[in-house]
Image (cartoon, rainbow, N blue to C red; front, side, top):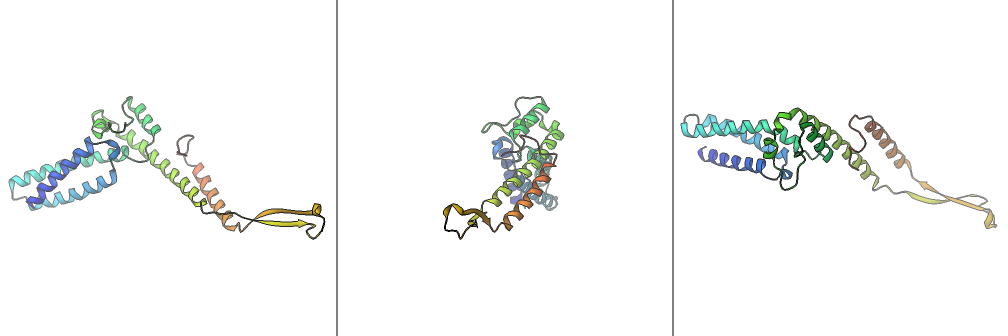
Length: 212
């Protein structure tokens, strides 16, 4: 357990530094949360195993406290690092905080920057904006999925003769083209109309808020 403790302690301190001080655009919150949960569970077990060793127990207790503290930061990390956050969401957050250094800049912005400007003091605002962003992101994905459903659809046009089709006079011959086998097309169209009507009723649909 002693070796495991030192490996866990070293790995967590290294990873936390990378998450906090590394490029903000590299953050992937879900794997971070899963990893932290796993290492926290292991730390709880190690505290029991090393309770009789004063030195290692002090170290594992420090690791336990560090992880607990970082777990409190995960909600804001998940909210900010969400793929659903668009530029207008960041601008809204900047306006709510009354700052002009909130919108992330690739290669320079870090989570440490957000902690330094007091992002945790605005956690309610951050979470609310993130929730709206996630809802809108879901609508965007639903629209994209509907577009993809039309990709394999093919319209088969056939010639349809009518009027005096048997007349030898070409001027009396009439024909047009019709689409054959439209049952699947109509069914898909009806399904999408229902979905679009439901989307239009969503409070998260606003002009310019969804990516085309």
